[in-house]
Image (cartoon, rainbow over all chains, first blue to last red):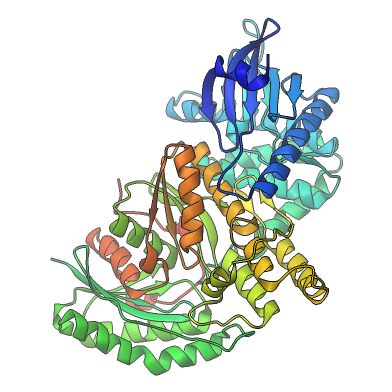
Amino acid sequence: MAVPEFLSTAELLKQGAEARVYRAQFLGKPAIVKERFPKRYRHSVLDEKLTHRRTVQEVRSILRCRKAGIPAPVVYFVDYTSNCIFMEEILRSTTVRDHIVGAQQSDAGNDVELRLLAQRVGQTLAKMHDEDVIHGDLTTSNMLLRRGPQDKESELVLIDFGLSYISALPEDKGVDLYVLEKAFLSTHPNTELVFEELLKSYAASSKRSPAVIKKLEEVRLRGRKRSMVG
Amino acid sequence: MTVVIGFEGSANKIGVGIIRDGEVLSNPRRTYITPPGQGFLPSDTARHHRAVVLTVLKEALDQAGLQPADIDCVAYTKPGMGAPLVTVALVARTVAQLWGKPLLGVNHCIGHIEMGRLITRANNPTVLYVSGGNTQVIAYSERRYRIFGETIDIAVGNCLDRFARVLKQISNDPSPGYNIEQMAKGSQYVELPYTVKGMDVSFSGILSYIEEAAHRLLTSDQCTAEDLCFSLQWQETLFSMLVEITERAMAHCGSQEVLIVGGVGNLRLQEMMAVMCEERGAKLFATDEFCIDNGAMIAQAGWEMFRSGQVTELEDSWVTQYRTDEVEVTWRP
């Protein structure tokens, strides 16, 4: 069965910024299908190039992370004609975003819990950067918490590698963290201390972190971000 | 009834606008135009503003048919380019004291947003703010206009302006961006770098690339100036990047409304944004003439702030650089 035909019977979960996400069964396994459909607002040549490149990058980075033991969805199948990636559905999971929002709403003891979560995110990102994977779109929506069976601590799973690439440059890693910092603080008001904890644990988890943190500080000051001319 | 007069002059436009409870009574403006191939320097821009500001002020009062006594509050813009800002703030301070009216410093970006909300009646949109100095994707939450995405180096308008200087034949009247849009009738797509980082963008690499490539491609007849304008702005690179980060912010925030504000918000950008909105069942709001810096937008944000009890004391009326998300929004739930 051709992929578009297959998708017409699948359940559309949501339309993200660059893809439609479906839930389906793939050879008997619960699967998520990410379909990068053509974006009509941009020139077709540019669109095809971006779409193909991002599909390739996403799969490559997922594989690289998984080889290094960083949790990411298993890739089952890729169709480059329709730009579809079939991957493992992360069952029993919530986004880190929803988790933080929930923790902020309930008051009891969440501070400690959020800091532990921040530490875990910091460690995972340090490990990812040590593999020279630049995620490119780090937000709390792109991290899932998978609950373990019973009481086992939940596991952090990284998703959405569409803007990712491979680079060893501290500059690229610094920008990656900067993008997260802005998304994090704008999405979750009053979490400056939590994010600080995240960076601290990032710094402590990687030998190569001093250069990255230095770049992050540079990027924060760069350009016209501090002023508002015009 | 609350009547607010707003002074804008943070870049190369000087404008004075009067707003009475959501109605624009007057909004005259002058633009400092430089010769092709040149940008506007702060000191020259300030000199231009100084020369015309009183004429524009008189026009604003005359067109509105108001006397100084009818005004309730004097609002002025900040932040922006130092020298022109100081000029405008000085005039605002002076008339506020002469007329015995309260003074109010208004964040320039929030002026754009509030004017956009007034004109379009958009309730709670994701805002794309694009101008010569700014490129930001903004959404409101918990008493702040929060910046979700922005340029990590130069602004999109700055990139277009500097590209116009590379080609040299592009006029600055009314703006380089407008004339690039008119020239963008090429058809050949020239591949340029495309840099989206999450909800952020970067334009400096594209500018370096095109500065270097333009000369080479044009002298060897591999493409025309029209092709470059087309590739840089139309459909292609810059605007695609802007639409993409807006869509990313919408998906992230679960928003179904977009508002484009700022001087780069031209028809082509609106057209592309409309296609994106249609694809995700969202609604686009755009402001056309009020996109460009003007006095009424400062008056409108001033009107909201004044009604919620804000004023700026004379000794606090200095101008400084500060970010959109530093302002506490006291007039929205």
